[in-house]
Image 1: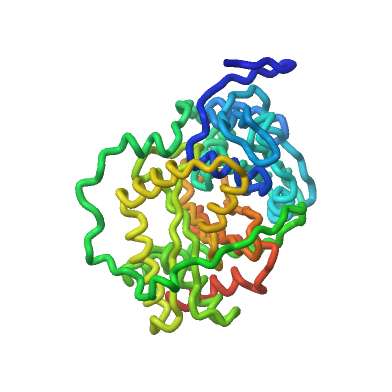
Image 2: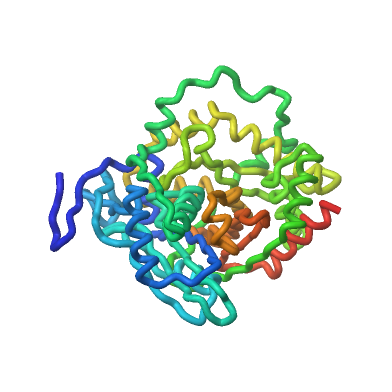
Length: 420
């Protein structure tokens, strides 16, 4: 099945998977897109970036698609499919600006599902004291998640450096991938403690949507440095915790103090790639809710250990597989259905999306700094903390329409204090 429109050909690739379909239906009224920023060591021209992005589209098929909704109407869409498109990823040149300003602005203009592609880029040329260019790439959520976006940025830097990057096959929907995996022989041992809170307290209150109005969100960014990152990793290991658990504890500590909450709910995306397949540009995540109770612990690392236990249980492969396949059976058919499902899953005080460590020869050699992901989901009152470690330094960025003064700086201070 193909359709020719002017000089552009769209060809059927595959239907959206269950989770991709939920995201697409939700985005019918609520734009969800996210950006990553890479500060380079050298300048890059618009032509050079445009050509590199074309090559990147040949490497990752979902960077060259549109979403076609054959049954589109005022209530949403069913039967949505990915179709290939030969349109280029657009590049916007922005001078005398910052990546923070452009990342915030990128949240004000939705990426249309058609015509493709479902990604775009901003080039900030060198200048104003910067020796290198900055590239901000923005992705619609139907085609990838934060870890997939990081993969794209890593491959883009490799292409800009003249490296050869092999093309990937069209990735299947995550439900199809998980259905093909063998059941795990064993699950997490019962030694993994359950959070010491009442079941009723874990239930998230229903969230509400903030109607999209194109308003520019507020961004706060903080770099804890190489020495601070090294101390955080070492101390987390010594306390039988992960960096992600420490981030949860630090965020909860700040929210306990600044908002008088006795309990903090943290939405944490769980990357499925380690359990399922290599890196690729595609949706591959589940989510879990970490609940930390102020009255149940005596110190920072008690909070972190509680978070670590909850995260360990949530990452059990069989748990992930079953929850993803159960999600596939829900099959919402309208935007209203998708909104109800998303609000039920995102009723948190803060979301922490930690992309882990950026890798690759070019990414480590030719990139000075990396930031993100920056995003909004149109949930009222949301606080989204994007985290990525690059060049041995952990960097955090908070995006929100309801800023908490000094939130990211205070989280950094909590992490520093905990590592003394």
